[in-house]
Image 1 (tube, helix red, strand yellow):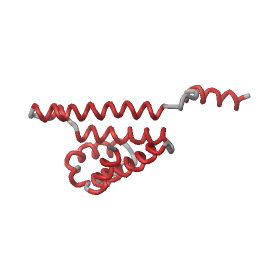
Image 2 (tube, helix red, strand yellow):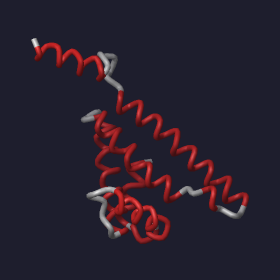
Image 3 (cartoon, one colour):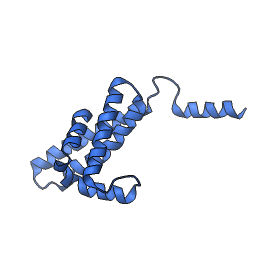
Image 4 (spheres, one colour):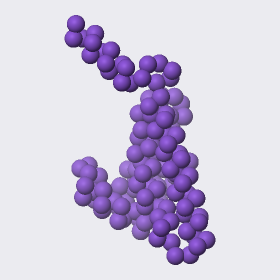
Length: 135
């Protein structure tokens, strides 16, 4: 999904521009580093999706890749599946399904981002590291 969606965004950002523009403006106003140009933001998001999906699929830097995918999924979902704005009931139902699908993928990505591969948790590792270096 991320490979196809990201590649599609890289190749044709103009089709996503109308839905993405208000979200990009809002993010650019609040977050430094978010491009103000909507097409640039769409392409950047798509590029991150392609790169992170490849890393996650191959098991390289899986946790940071999952976190990056989660971060890209939030604005995509917010811009593309605004079911609460759809006036047609069938369109509203379709957009709600896509919104909830993306929400469930977000949950899976957050789990993958926090997964330590059955090793100690990140909190335990941080405490243990501090204890070792403070002695």
